[in-house]
Length: 279
Picture (cartoon, rainbow, N blue to C red):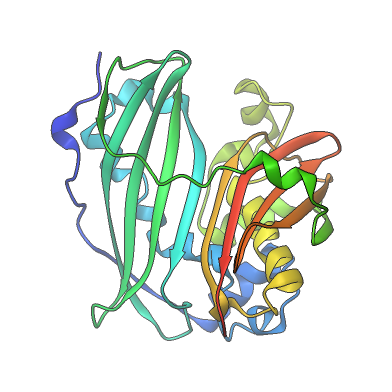
């Protein structure tokens, strides 16, 4: 049983998505986003960018990964590259391809590249999604993986420029699932989550990432999504409803910020990187 390199770099069929003000506002509310323009649906919050591409997300892997392994797939990393914000009235078209994989002793990591364009052809955003197949080493490295966004440990010698505390509500997953179009039962069904070896229902990783996005924008981005150029994270541990998040943000060069998010002493988001430009 091996990954099939012949399936790499094959684009999926384009998938259309019409953006409404109501959908943007619903997503902002489901992620406790306090930024008024997001709450009103005037512009999309950053991580909403996953919603138009969600249908295309795993489809490329069907060309490469044995279907018997799909139950072992974890979302490992997410890297957004923003060319412009999503706005109500946008008619978007998304497609995806798997670009590469690497077998490792504890599993195999693989990258799917997605692009989201306006109907005119204008590139709206690009995304690199790295997933990890637990316990299966495919035994080789093929193609290319997502670009690095590793946290530079030398940054720990300097104090954070901001620390943000946030609370994950008890009903967060039940609000986020419909808003994001993500029906995965480990986020909604206690019995299914425990059967999967989890302590109970866990928060969607992208919901946690959305929390970090508005923490960054409010603290170092002037609450302006127009300034955000890149947002990348590595998902390190699950977050449970009812827990408190703490995000530490450090300057990492002009317009660059490195961040980590923890629950108590447990780091739940590692290798966070945000690139923020002028308005």
